[in-house]
Length: 188
Ligand SMILES: [Zn+2]
Image 1 (cartoon, protein in one colour):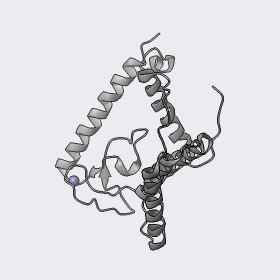
Image 2: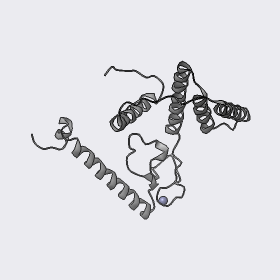
Image 3: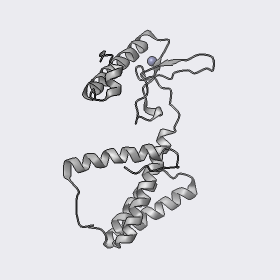
């Protein structure tokens, strides 16, 4: 594999995720070949309507990622020129990458995953516990629990146990990896 250096923040991770998805698709369906199926007056009108809606939202300061992605997918569906279509597909993927990066960079809402109540924060001590954040999970979606409420701590312990169990299951599958064998201390 050629090394690829991606400089946009978060894009390397997004590209790895896409690589995983594509490999999964190819494994399941093979390389697919279909007609484009794009174009037509209805789709032109829809694309134009969504473009106008997104522009209005942008000017009112109420634009959302949903506006951006719907506008792009409608433009794709309306386009029939293969070169333009390809440009729009890349542009749509860039909107998806930007949206994912925005989700990945959001602060945690600090709502307890057990009781659903706010977790107070202060600068002196940790006020939450929880399992390690999993690769591919955005920080804002990783479960956190009250450190000072026994029932919430117990829920955190259960979440940590489940994560450790899942990790053991994964590493067992990969135990052909010498680094993992070493880590397992099999004495060889
Ligand atoms: Zn709680």
